[in-house]
Amino acid sequence: MDIRTLTFDQLDARTAYDVWRLRQDVFVVEQACPYPDLDGRDLEPGTRHVVGLLDDAVAGYLRVLDDGDLARVGRVVLARSARGQGLADPLMRAALDVVGPRPSVLDAQAPLAGWYAGFGYAVSGPEFLEDGIPHLPMRRPGRV
Image (cartoon, rainbow, N blue to C red; front, side):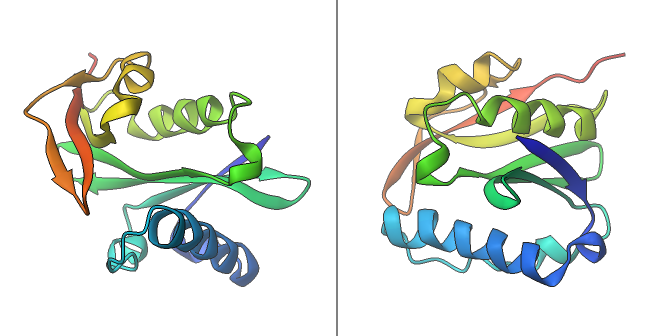
């Protein structure tokens, strides 16, 4: 997988379209969660878009938000055809490169908490429902 870490202004129109289409296909359609995916945070100067390409097609994506003293990882998604091949791992490693030494947080779909734990995240609060899907808040401490 070819991983690219980009600002919003570095996303070309086709890649941006493919990213938003992937997010819509998985989060809104497949998971049946109608919600406003385009929340304005993609445009923020500190946001980094981590795009995974297979054969020049967007197969995976996540974004890292700058929330001041900590980073927030979110919108972690793989195309159905890319799942089960370990392709999310390089996306998360690229996210952690963006995060650097800062602490970071994410809201994991509950069945994926163990996978995120492999990247140093620990459950930091009680399970909650988001759009009818159980999630767990997770935190990764900063490094010196």
